[in-house]
Image 1 (tube, rainbow, N blue to C red):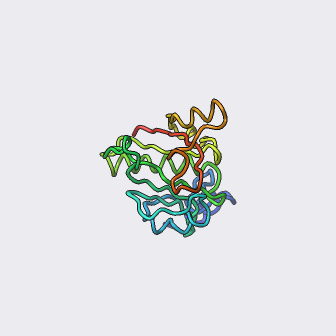
Image 2 (image 1 turned 60 degrees about the vertical axis):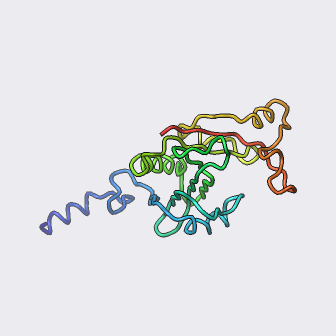
Image 3 (image 1 turned 30 degrees about the vertical axis):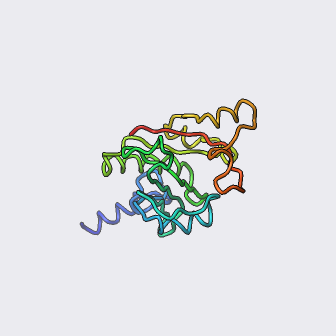
Length: 184
């Protein structure tokens, strides 16, 4: 490349435009497969349920070298849901540092990765705690609501009862959950 070509390229670049960002600046957020142990510190610090010990698949969202988002999948634990072609999204953590639309961007990337690299997976499921969030990200990402009878009862009378019939450990009462489904 001649000196003139380099000069023209530098002059043509808009002031807000990053090195290879195109004419519209893009966030530095990028996604990669990860290990459960790699995303555990983020989940411990920023997710209300904390980290998980193991995962079939985990994914990280990074801004530069900082983990700012993650998703963790494993085989469903519910007897009637356990199917080799099904994965359960057991943790999804997004921080403000991930930026605008990070949730739908991450879900899109993960779905494309699973379709390419895990063709045996036909369906994703997840549960959202009705006391923590509305499930807007699931809806925005194309997931279908697949209510459990516990969640339906909660909607009807505002009381309902939790999955696990109220408690997993005999002490802590769990909130009703809404089940979500995504076909790959």
